[in-house]
Image (cartoon, rainbow, N blue to C red; front, top):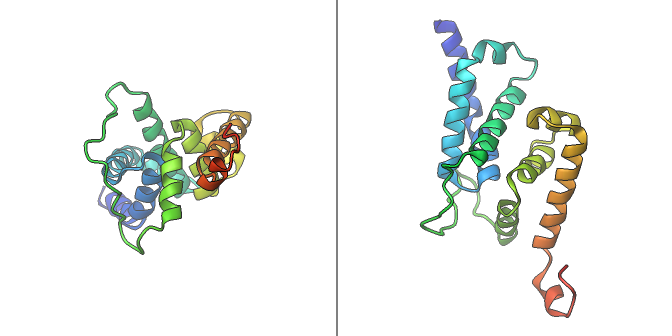
Length: 170
C-alpha cells in the first residue's frame, strides 16, 4: 500500500536518530546500535498496521527495539570480542566530556536487563509500569533491576580519590 509505506517511511525518517541513540545506550557500540535499529525497523514494518494504530507509536517502536536488544543478549551468536578498543564516534553534536565517557563505561558494565531498565526509566523517562510493559515483567522486577543498576552505577562512578584514602570499596 503506497499510503502505508509513505507513512512508515516518514515515521522512520523522523525517529531513526532517536532510536539509534536509545540503541547505543543499550549496547555501547554505534555499529551494533545500527544493526539493532535496522532489525527493529524491519519488525516495525511487518507490524506497521498495529503500530500505527497504537496510541503511542514511539512507545511501540521503543518496545520493539528493547525486545530486539534483549533477544540478542540471550542468543549464543552474540559478539563478545571487541577487536579495536576505540572511543565511539558520536552521530553529531558536541564532543563527549570525560563524565559522559565514565557514565557510558559504567552503563556498559551493567547486565543487559539492568541496563535496559535504567535506560528506559531515566533516558526514555518511562514510569515503572511502562518499563514493566516494555520488558514484559512485573513492576517489582523493574524496581529491583533499576535499584541494582543504579547501585552498580554509583559504585562504578565513585571518585578514585575516595578509594585511595583507605575507604572500603565494597
